[in-house]
Length: 155
Image (cartoon, rainbow, N blue to C red; front, side, top):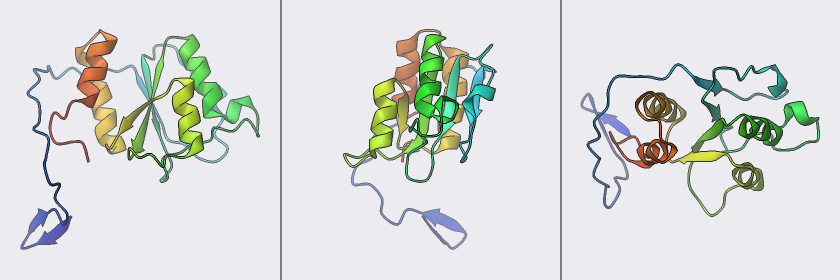
Protein backbone atom coordinates (compact mmCIF):
# COMPACT_ATOMS: atom_id res chain seq x y z
CA UNK A 1 0.00 0.00 0.00
CA UNK A 2 0.97 3.58 -0.45
CA UNK A 3 -0.15 6.51 1.70
CA UNK A 4 -0.48 9.76 -0.20
CA UNK A 5 -2.76 12.76 0.25
CA UNK A 6 -4.08 11.25 3.48
CA UNK A 7 -5.30 8.15 1.61
CA UNK A 8 -4.12 4.57 1.08
CA UNK A 9 -3.93 3.06 -2.39
CA UNK A 10 -2.68 -0.27 -3.72
CA UNK A 11 0.73 -0.17 -5.37
CA UNK A 12 0.09 -3.33 -7.37
CA UNK A 13 -3.68 -3.77 -7.62
CA UNK A 14 -4.80 -7.23 -8.75
CA UNK A 15 -5.72 -7.56 -12.42
CA UNK A 16 -9.13 -8.84 -11.44
CA UNK A 17 -10.66 -8.82 -8.01
CA UNK A 18 -13.12 -11.49 -6.96
CA UNK A 19 -16.40 -9.89 -5.96
CA UNK A 20 -17.22 -10.20 -2.29
CA UNK A 21 -20.11 -12.39 -1.17
CA UNK A 22 -23.11 -11.12 0.70
CA UNK A 23 -23.63 -13.59 3.55
CA UNK A 24 -26.21 -12.97 6.22
CA UNK A 25 -24.49 -13.07 9.59
CA UNK A 26 -25.51 -12.38 13.13
CA UNK A 27 -23.00 -10.65 15.39
CA UNK A 28 -22.45 -13.97 17.15
CA UNK A 29 -18.77 -14.53 17.90
CA UNK A 30 -17.80 -17.93 19.27
CA UNK A 31 -16.10 -17.98 22.65
CA UNK A 32 -14.70 -21.46 21.97
CA UNK A 33 -11.78 -20.65 19.63
CA UNK A 34 -8.30 -21.03 21.10
CA UNK A 35 -5.68 -18.69 19.59
CA UNK A 36 -2.04 -19.81 19.80
CA UNK A 37 0.96 -17.64 18.95
CA UNK A 38 4.03 -19.86 18.50
CA UNK A 39 7.45 -19.21 19.97
CA UNK A 40 10.58 -21.36 20.39
CA UNK A 41 10.07 -23.81 23.23
CA UNK A 42 6.25 -23.69 23.17
CA UNK A 43 4.95 -26.65 25.21
CA UNK A 44 1.63 -27.71 23.67
CA UNK A 45 0.84 -30.02 26.59
CA UNK A 46 0.01 -26.92 28.65
CA UNK A 47 -3.09 -26.14 26.58
CA UNK A 48 -6.43 -27.21 28.03
CA UNK A 49 -8.72 -28.19 25.17
CA UNK A 50 -11.91 -28.44 27.23
CA UNK A 51 -14.64 -26.22 25.77
CA UNK A 52 -12.63 -25.60 22.58
CA UNK A 53 -14.26 -26.07 19.16
CA UNK A 54 -11.30 -24.97 17.02
CA UNK A 55 -7.73 -23.73 17.31
CA UNK A 56 -6.36 -20.76 15.36
CA UNK A 57 -2.59 -21.29 15.26
CA UNK A 58 -0.42 -18.41 14.09
CA UNK A 59 2.59 -19.22 11.91
CA UNK A 60 6.07 -17.79 11.73
CA UNK A 61 6.77 -15.24 8.98
CA UNK A 62 7.67 -18.03 6.57
CA UNK A 63 4.33 -19.81 6.98
CA UNK A 64 5.81 -22.53 9.18
CA UNK A 65 5.78 -23.77 12.76
CA UNK A 66 7.66 -26.47 14.67
CA UNK A 67 6.68 -29.71 12.96
CA UNK A 68 9.73 -31.65 14.14
CA UNK A 69 9.64 -34.26 16.92
CA UNK A 70 13.31 -33.43 17.65
CA UNK A 71 12.59 -31.75 21.02
CA UNK A 72 9.83 -34.15 22.06
CA UNK A 73 6.14 -34.62 21.38
CA UNK A 74 5.05 -31.75 23.64
CA UNK A 75 6.90 -29.27 21.42
CA UNK A 76 5.66 -30.47 18.04
CA UNK A 77 2.67 -28.89 16.34
CA UNK A 78 2.19 -32.16 14.42
CA UNK A 79 1.61 -34.00 17.71
CA UNK A 80 -0.68 -31.21 18.95
CA UNK A 81 -2.76 -31.49 15.76
CA UNK A 82 -3.09 -35.24 16.40
CA UNK A 83 -4.25 -34.52 19.95
CA UNK A 84 -6.81 -32.02 18.69
CA UNK A 85 -8.03 -34.39 15.99
CA UNK A 86 -8.58 -37.11 18.62
CA UNK A 87 -10.84 -34.64 20.45
CA UNK A 88 -12.71 -33.53 17.32
CA UNK A 89 -11.05 -30.11 17.25
CA UNK A 90 -9.98 -28.58 13.94
CA UNK A 91 -6.65 -26.73 13.87
CA UNK A 92 -6.48 -23.78 11.46
CA UNK A 93 -3.20 -22.18 10.41
CA UNK A 94 -2.54 -18.63 9.18
CA UNK A 95 -1.05 -16.51 7.77
CA UNK A 96 0.27 -18.29 4.71
CA UNK A 97 0.43 -17.29 1.06
CA UNK A 98 -0.73 -20.12 -1.18
CA UNK A 99 2.18 -21.22 -3.30
CA UNK A 100 3.64 -24.36 -4.82
CA UNK A 101 6.81 -23.47 -2.90
CA UNK A 102 5.33 -24.11 0.57
CA UNK A 103 7.83 -25.40 3.11
CA UNK A 104 8.04 -29.11 3.82
CA UNK A 105 7.02 -28.46 7.44
CA UNK A 106 3.87 -26.68 6.22
CA UNK A 107 3.07 -29.67 4.02
CA UNK A 108 3.55 -32.00 7.01
CA UNK A 109 1.05 -29.95 9.02
CA UNK A 110 -1.50 -30.09 6.18
CA UNK A 111 -0.98 -33.84 5.79
CA UNK A 112 -1.63 -34.24 9.52
CA UNK A 113 -5.01 -32.55 9.13
CA UNK A 114 -4.45 -28.86 9.79
CA UNK A 115 -6.50 -26.51 7.63
CA UNK A 116 -4.61 -23.54 6.25
CA UNK A 117 -6.50 -20.30 5.83
CA UNK A 118 -4.63 -19.12 2.77
CA UNK A 119 -3.91 -15.52 1.79
CA UNK A 120 -5.37 -13.89 4.88
CA UNK A 121 -3.84 -12.06 7.83
CA UNK A 122 -3.94 -13.81 11.20
CA UNK A 123 -6.27 -11.12 12.55
CA UNK A 124 -8.79 -11.52 9.72
CA UNK A 125 -8.57 -15.32 9.92
CA UNK A 126 -9.23 -15.27 13.67
CA UNK A 127 -12.28 -13.02 13.34
CA UNK A 128 -13.59 -15.19 10.50
CA UNK A 129 -13.29 -18.27 12.72
CA UNK A 130 -15.09 -16.49 15.56
CA UNK A 131 -17.93 -15.59 13.19
CA UNK A 132 -17.97 -18.96 11.42
CA UNK A 133 -18.26 -20.96 14.63
CA UNK A 134 -20.69 -18.42 16.09
CA UNK A 135 -23.04 -18.56 13.08
CA UNK A 136 -22.78 -22.08 11.66
CA UNK A 137 -22.87 -25.61 13.07
CA UNK A 138 -22.20 -27.57 9.90
CA UNK A 139 -18.51 -28.20 9.08
CA UNK A 140 -19.06 -27.58 5.36
CA UNK A 141 -20.85 -24.27 6.03
CA UNK A 142 -17.91 -23.25 8.23
CA UNK A 143 -15.42 -24.14 5.48
CA UNK A 144 -17.46 -22.37 2.80
CA UNK A 145 -17.66 -19.22 4.92
CA UNK A 146 -13.92 -19.23 5.63
CA UNK A 147 -12.96 -19.45 1.95
CA UNK A 148 -15.59 -16.92 0.84
CA UNK A 149 -14.38 -13.36 0.40
CA UNK A 150 -16.93 -11.56 2.54
CA UNK A 151 -15.32 -8.16 3.00
CA UNK A 152 -12.16 -8.11 0.90
CA UNK A 153 -10.21 -9.94 3.59
CA UNK A 154 -8.32 -12.18 1.16
CA UNK A 155 -4.92 -10.82 0.12
